[in-house]
Length: 233
Length: 233
Image 1 (cartoon, rainbow over the protein chains, first blue to last red):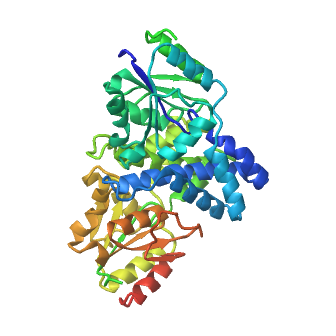
Image 2 (cartoon, rainbow over the protein chains, first blue to last red):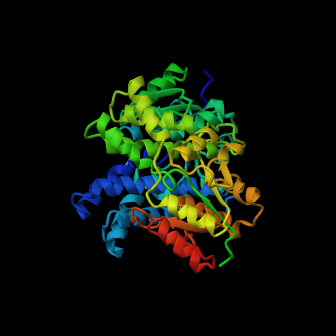
């Protein structure tokens, strides 16, 4: 395996718990919260891919926050839930200020102490990422907070993954890309990164004829992987 | 509206009823059939988009039949269902030989009698489409059966939608593109086609800042749309 010289994280679902919105959704729409949160997330990702695939030049690009609103409105319509302005604002506020997973902050600090530059490479637009990083108490931990907004192409477009090597001035293979979304870890592997899939839910791997370099259950397993790769953390 | 000079159909879900596999799935996995069919379909579409978005040059392309098998295996794994070779073969056979929706054959014949050249433009690879067209009794109705396999890019990539105007030697705006998948009708609208969304399930429109030219519930509504557009059928 290549020497790891930097670690780059996906944001939503990896650093920040996107399904934390489920509790709020359940409170607002008893019995429908989980379905709403799942469909919201599904459409959010669908819309990023449809727009980027339809226009490699970025002509259909729309910032992730706006897509997040579109997806929420679709999901509510589809499930027959009335989403008035106040309710929508509550749901969006929940999404804007997500919590980190419990072990994340400690793990990030250990990686930094080991001398590894850290980054985020996310579909989220810069304003969203800025708020989310602060909400999760992760301010100051990242050398680069990279948004695909700079290239107007969502993951798994190569232009999106290219942001990491460019910012860190390292070959992709020397950057460890970490995501809890298997498809994202696979996309990064295709691009050339060394990768780690945080499989929190214990799902099977996506069948895409490519495997993340490493897999574990949470961020503590990532620390073990980094140590095994020769960087004591 | 532009004069309509040809009609091109999406295949799976539009001409052929993909959820017809649900009954077989339910028979094989009582109580889990619907979940299996839905997750299978979801992953099938996800994998097409992930592969095309990751490699605009087609380097990650894999034929739709093979992706269909990958998606079925993933869905079964994810739901904890044991898919032995015989069961898998039964599910795949069901998918290979889908039925058409009841009104489709009559509607296609009326469009042809009105002098409109007809086509299919599908993610499916040529062998799949050939078998499906024959199974549904639609052999001989189409002037062009177009597969994205020719360009190794799945919808909503512009290269995929470009197959229609090229084959029919018509501007996209003079071709009516018909799909029961709202995202596909939207993608074709972005590309420049005149479009019709067959909204069989009564779902809300996808929030993609674009609307199909027309919408209806089934293929009979399509005939009304074509008549209103100036072609008596």
